[in-house]
Image 1: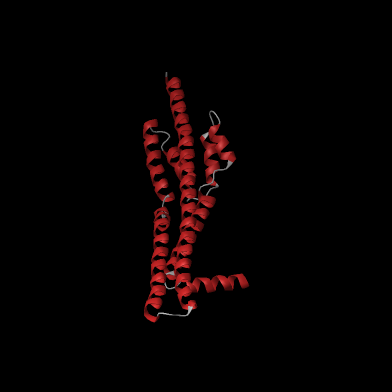
Image 2: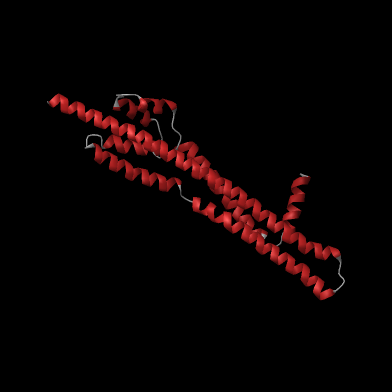
Length: 215
């Protein structure tokens, strides 16, 4: 408890610039938590479903049964259902529709990542503004009063240093979050593309067998 009280006192010493920095910190944490929930809830692929798609000549009915147990907002379900819906069309048609859906999914996964990227730059700059304000206060006291109480001067210096540190910490957290979720997004889209290729290959296989039966 004492540690939190000391932290609160330190933040108050950071001056007015701590308020916008606190807002950036809240936004950063909110976006990271939201992204973590989305990937955990709507972008996880079970091993059973992955193994089924990797199986040569799997039945479409088995895939539909797996997908029926997923939430309608699940990204893999959305993607696979587009392929399933268009599997009776030419393979190039199904592939085109799957690519369109993949673009929508990628846009959804990347939503608000630009905010984290902006905070990476904005937080240190706000901290720098706090540094300048704190140093101006310290020098103003020295210039106006000559011999002054050292505590008054160090208060301005403390404001400058605290604002800088807080801005850098927020920027580091946002940077790690941005890089992590960008990498997770890339991995998800690569896996979706790979499994989508398996489904398109299955469509081509079905269509080839139909041609042989007609012949």
